[in-house]
Image (cartoon, rainbow, N blue to C red; front, side, top):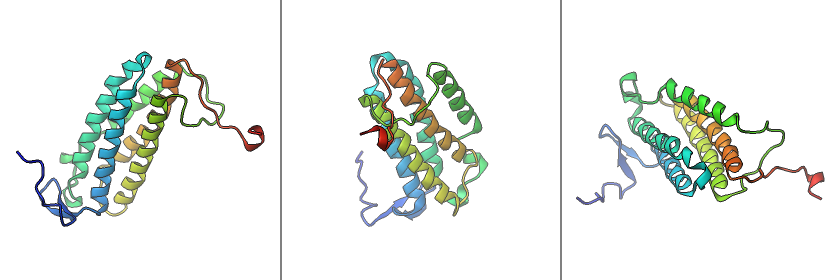
Length: 187
């Protein structure tokens, strides 16, 4: 089977229901960003340090969920209804519980932290910021077309989850967080 179809050569693509859409449509951009996010999570999994390998299963679950989310987004607005929605409130609750568990191991946050400290932590922050870009795109899409009401809370919480994961990773690696210093403190 060939992977290429040449159907998209003119800037159009097929949505999940078979309808045609411009590749620049905000819906296509939305599920494209989710795909990009999923790839960055795959890179983070590959970069996990030995003391943090237990996070692999949760990260892989997130990849599966994001694939489901992308499939949901690949349906046009008129097809958006409860029987096709996959994202649900339980996903968001699970993320909140996981953040609570990870946070139990962390010192209270007293300063802003900067992305970095290790390759895995820096990648977790890349993922966090990409989640925020996905969220902004989904908010834009929701202004124009119907979306699953569970989708935005899940994506919002997902960014928080990656922030806590980055802090948890640096702790597991036995390294210090990179903290932001005010200009007066940097001199």
